[in-house]
Amino acid sequence: MSITRSSLAAILLSSVLAAQGFTSPAGYTTVEGSSNHDYILFRYNDLRWQQLDATSVGQAPTLIQRISWRRDGTTGADPTWIARTIDIGAVLSNSVVPGAISEGYAANYSGTPTNVFISRPVNLPDWTANLGSPAPFNLSLPLDLPWVYAGLEPFLWELNVTNNTSASDYGNDFQSITGSTATSTAGTSLGTGCIATGQTAAMSLAGTLKNQVTRFRLAYTVTRAPASTPVFMNIDFVNSNLPVPGLCANVIAVPTISFGVGISDIAGAVPELALENIPYSAALIGTALYSQALAPDFGQPVLPFALSNGRSHVFPNPAATPATVTRVYGYRLATGAMRAPSVWTGGIVTLFD
Image 1 (cartoon, helix red, strand yellow):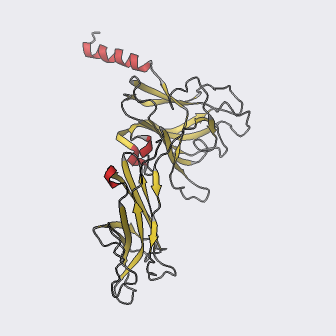
Image 2: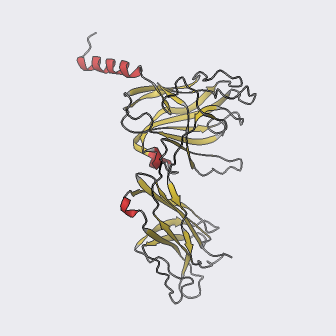
Image 3: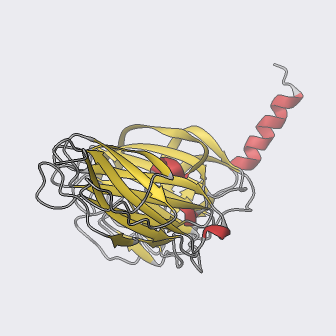
């Protein structure tokens, strides 16, 4: 059988790439992490986890054919760290810089994410005994689709975990990372909103503005709006604090920018709306935004609108020391509801080879 020059080149390249491997965070192949993570990744019955890492940028390109984890080596024998079966799906992607990590998972990809391990039952090992420090990487996923990490951008690994047969803890090796994922401000509440039809307290607007190193993120939540009603957001750059005859609250923000937030539920709450990718500009730092929610409300005595309180946000300075490894995750609570995703620094020690 003949082989073409291009085919031979591809085979040789694959052989070279396959020989490489690295850990996230970088440098922990034979070094124990600083801590442990003993209750999230392989404990909950329904979990989504993303870990963003910039520590391996600049390394040689690597063909990733397997992802592996190891037991924490600093914890003694633990009878609850038993074997279990879990449905696992895995995704690899280039990512935004870790300091720009968002609670919105999709905003963390740079480019198109790849499903490298199709979700299916995986048998996890028994980790009740201490296996040394560091322990062997004996929890492995051989990938369905190999993925090349070029070493040019930060990268991201993601797991979707379901159908866990054990609710007990399971201790992964973990490395703490100093630094901050972002600077943020919850802003200042201005004035008082209307009491919307069917409510007993004023319509309320809350929000958070983050400086995420390469972008800004602005997220809003509205509560106690009229039930099952479209809600809108008005944004301005000055506090008008304008009384309008017939309106039940002063206009803080005139609609210099206006957009729909969503439909309120039967309690008058609107799920978080996040503007994930506001372009970064140093010129914005120190600039104030003024926001106010508005909803149709035909139960008002004069003009058929309900207004929330206003809220001011000032674009904050960036973090002095952005983190190099961060993670975001959410999981299903015992009540059946999903815990809202949250962002943290540091990462579970993971081998890619």
